[in-house]
Image (cartoon, rainbow, N blue to C red; front, side, top):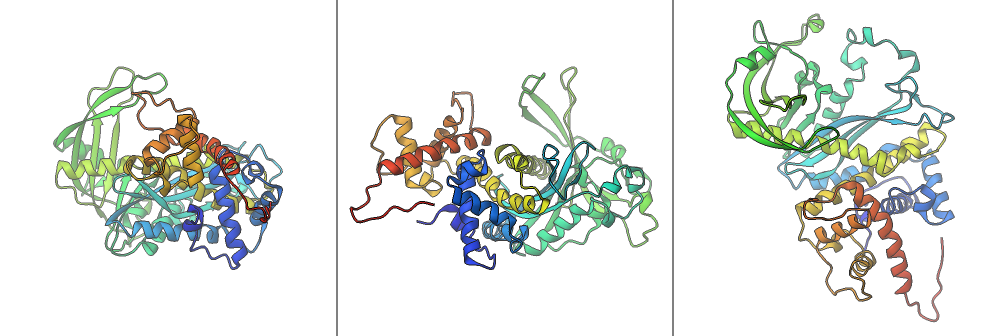
Amino acid sequence: MESWAAVELRHARLGDARLNRRLVRVVEDLAAKPTASVPEASGTWAATKGAYRFWDSDRVTPEAIRAGHVSSTLERVGRHELVLAVQDTTSLDFAHHPKTKGLGPLDNIHQRGMKVHSTLAVSSDGVPLGLLHQAHWVRDPDAVGMSRIRRRRATEEKESQRWLTALAAVQEIVPSQVKVVTVADSEADIFDLFALARRPGSELLIRGTHDRRVGEAGRLWQTLEQSPVRGHYTLEVRGKAGQEARRACLSVRYTSVEVQPPRHHLERSCLSSVSLQVVLVSEERPPRGVKPITWLLYTSLPVESLGDALRCVRWYSYRWLVERYHYVLKSGCRIEQLQLQTAERLERALATYCIVAWRLLWLTHEARRSPNSPCDLVLKPEEWQALYCHVHRTTSPPQSPPTLQQAVRWIAQLGGFLGRKGDGQPGVQTIWKGLRRLQDMADMWQLLHHHPSPNSTMTYG
């Protein structure tokens, strides 16, 4: 039986079968122990040296490493009528490794590293399907302190171009029969993105931040405040530091607008107004001292009813998945702890860990979507058998594997999930911690239950 990594990366084409096999091996090792160091995850010195040589090879590009995973993502995307292409940007900070060559400044002058912009495919019911596009870049140190003149530059000369580039790349690779909705936060409130030519079936869902000119002489917020409340709904808000959990009553407004080009774009006569729908969701009576919930969403999707508006709100709520993806990449896979000495090696490692991060995020949500599926769809026999016997304090596993949901809860319990009645479903953090313990248990299980024939030879490395 092929491993999940071998299946996921079966389309990888690195120019050499040995490099293809090495990629599969590295991904398998890192996914089994995502929080471990590279030597610990690799298990042997030979495997560790192989991973470092792989990331040092000029024959391998980050794009080629990601390509096999992107191909598998597109296969999953092709099974849906509609998918969300969720974009977000994060920073990788390697300031604590000052000798690393080829890095640049980040948002803070004391930080050094690279910027990463990811586009994650998400199903309409919130399951992460995989990476569609990723870009990474290093800022020019000479450009620090030039923010005041940045607004006057064309979009293609600014980092803002990343939103347009990712949209164009996704449109090119996603099958034409699949509707794709680009979802992004307020950093993507860029007129050039709204005005960008899109193929049929390519739509926008962007959180707004600017009080733009709309119509002949109006402003967006004034127009929305004058539009009627179309309905209400209740949102369960989780508690956080200094704030208790609450039920927020939200009003919903929506209307159609003609968004005008910004004044600093007026010299570009080719730009004309763009027709969009806007949805405003706002909390009516927030508790004292609590900032009210307010979402302003631009969309090219039709919004003709309260149901259409709430669908946009629900789809936008899935944007947090790409933030969670970056969180797994940095906190779960600990990519910022790598000491690879050059930006080029870090870029190859990033492309490798991106596959691992998706796997961890997908496992969390697949267990919620398909709770009754057998767990051997994602776990090897020695993994689920060792897991079952550990939980039930027995030496005899059942003939049939437990469900995926049950197995994932047991894995999470290995990582500290208590599983109490009110704890809900386990999160990705307890799952990645549990996977590390599970791998050690599975290795021991395999060792105890492996009975080589008298003439067999065991090899290492």
